[in-house]
Image (tube, rainbow, N blue to C red; front, side, top):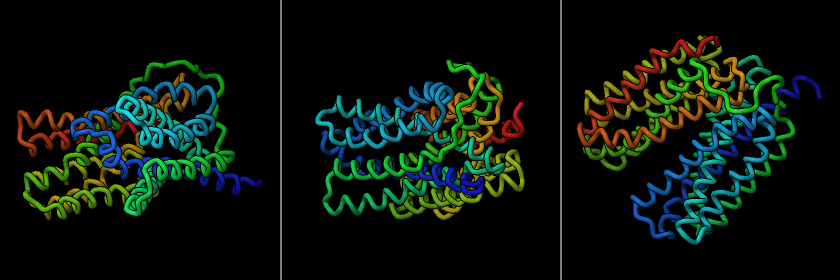
Length: 380
């Protein structure tokens, strides 16, 4: 196998991981309402149950960094894709709320660990190619999620059971990843510590960028439609259009992000993206118009889309006693903490401020990302 063929196969293998992970999560997302009904959960009860997914992810990310350093990210991917494939089906088939909660913790842990492992592998692929790849791979994850969710809706309407649907999607995703995993890059480092390593100042600052980016993304995802419907008095169709515009902007951003990073550099991409996202949000909140909000969320998504992938790529270049996987795990863990905290913090702020006032915190978050943009440059 020649060098060019090896590169193509490595790209195919890591792409299958991102696509497969997105497909499993998308299939699960579209069946959550049925799982809620089958377990007799209220909306508040479902919200509390879904927190278990985030808890599992946060608990799994740091140790996954250690394991990926010791055994290589490819080995972790092979193990975790099986768990990711099984966990949704187990959660869906659980006959009681306690078993459902355990299944959701397992789902979060498997997905969080796989996020760290596949992002670490993406760093290895970028180094092999000598060019950016991280944003495109995250776009593939989003594509797998959206396609699986669309197909899942059709499957659900055809009367296919939750357990059967999730088991089939999981089996296809896991089989595809396992078959192509032989082409993943063997990236177990030599001469690094394999225990927990305290993140350096550089990694903490990159983590703060990731926190700001995912804090904003999670808050818009959970509160965007509420803002359009309750504050702007828009219809459900307008609220849906606003979120679709945000998702479309994110997708376009990530599909073009690697090209832009190659041409203009990571610092410029981060700085311009944060400025665009923050400015768009500020204008939308100031104008209080449904049309302006739709346009603003499109621009916000385009600016925001590359912030997290670029932060992860930068983490992979930071010299650390714990190796690349440990660095990626540190930044990812801090970032996902922001994703989980964002919606809750917005809700808390609304008790003292109006919803538009609470959403101004997203503009502040983008300002922090802008101030820290230079941290994604050449590592110390």
